[in-house]
Image (cartoon, rainbow, N blue to C red; front, side):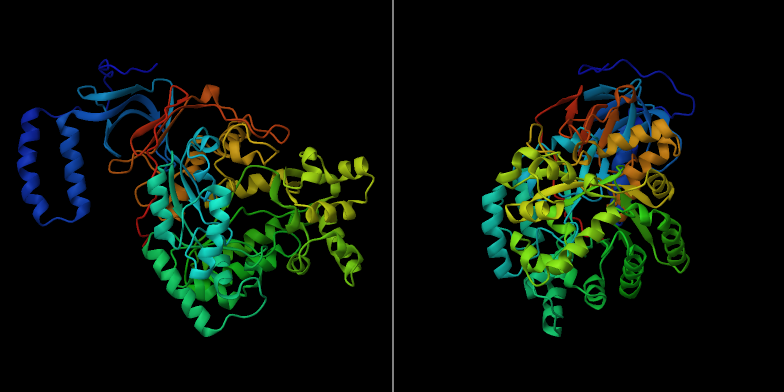
Amino acid sequence: MNSESEPNPATSREGASPLPGRKDVLKLGAAVGLAALGASCGPIRTLRNTLRRMSGSFDVILWRGTIVDGRGGPGFEADIGIHGDEITAIGNLSDARAANNFDCTGYHVFPGFVDLHSHSDYVLFEDRRAFSKIFQGVTTEIVGQDGRSPGPFTPALAKSMHAYLKKQYSVPYIRDVSDYYDALEELRPALNVKTMIGAGILRQGQAGYNRRKLDREEIKNIRKLIESGLSDGACGISSGLEYLPNAHSDAPELIEMCKGSPVYSTHMRNEDDRVIEALLEAIRIARDANVPLNISHFKLQGKRNWNQIHTAFQVIQEARKEGLRVTMDRYPYLAYHTSLNSLFPIWAQRKGIRPSLKNGDQAARLRRDLESKVQGIGGYDRIHLGVVYSRKYEDYSGKSIAELSRIKGKQPFDLMLDIAGSGSASTVVFAMSPENLRRIYSDPFVAVASDGSALPPGMSGRPHPRNYGTFTHFLEMIRKEKFLSLEEAVRKCTALPASIAGLADRGQIQEGYKADIAIFDLSRLRSYASYENPVRISAGVEALLVNGEFVIRNTLFTGVYPGRPLREVVS
């Protein structure tokens, strides 16, 4: 259905304006020079794009697709003309020509998906193709999540981070957001990247993993780093308050960090038994700092907490009524993914999770706290090993703790300590409600986000399927359950997350916007990634353009790398 050669003229469409004649182009060309003298960049761009449209010549034309533009309105059939990295014409381009043509007849044309919560910060340096994401239709990733970001670092922290990152991911020396963007510029990944600033990294640079209040001078140092990072193009502050060292940050500290930020995006301090308390804290921080709030991977873990969804939305709606912008993101799965160590209480993590803890002075407390956590989850059979770093247990990826306990003849508590103390593992934990998932996605201010990474095919272990299937699985779910329209579902993957991240010219198919475009054959749409076999590429993306260049064409990777760091300052 695709053509590299000159296209056949598009069929005439009622209401679509034809291209003007060449004389009109010359007249407008004379006017542009005069108008541009006193015009701002916006009007200049509008005139430039109008002139390009009138010229009838484009770099790329996407013909006859059903366009769902990302704003939530009904789809419509039209052509799209692209110059360089910009969309410059939408409508009937039957009289136009382009060097590069793609027939979208029978396909749906969406804005490229914006993954609002990504952990691809460093893995892109291992494999810049980003296969697990681009084959879902993702064109932009927002990294620096959960309080961990690629800068800005203090000099001492930059040095220690470099020793790890160079060995693990071959990442060059990074001191700040600008260095990270420079490294991405040189790398040229397949998709775009923008980062947040992690509150945990900021605290670690001043106090390491020590549990204490930061003094005024340390807060002052942090403020300087934040101002530098935002001016370099970071898009907000993130926190991960269930992880060390960010768990040591209290609300006043986070309020100081968030002041002047475009958005505060938080992995809240608790997502199970104390989720309402954590939600109230997040709202307080955003309100007192006078910034919008985004709640990362919003969920209520554990069956005993599922009915708190009603209270949670009452709290959120009240905050909105009072003028606070509250958004959320969520992946479309009922299991979450985290390190095995994070299932243990924070006080035990500070000491280092090791088998000897079961014989220490606080062994009874540790057992009680862990058993309470597991009881809330629903049992050890709901905790499965994901990617296993422990050589002792590396052959048991995918097994539940309950099953492995029977295989090894160990009590689950002792087994978890042994795994943690011998290299640890990630876990996939089944603890969420399908009814709550639908309720969450029904809120108009909830975006789709993977909470995953851009991973290559063929990796070992069993990561969460969200890395390979979040967006395609979401679209499949909507098609099957029909609690949202296709247009609203696309908005949650595009314009909404772009707005939250402050991306002014991405996430919509509009003239003047960047040509990040996903072309789907919805008849082939399928998320193949499952919990049993999570390392499988999605189907349905017929073509994908990033900054006006084809990364996927005719379902195949093109070997082109047009991605870039998004350095624009967010106002």
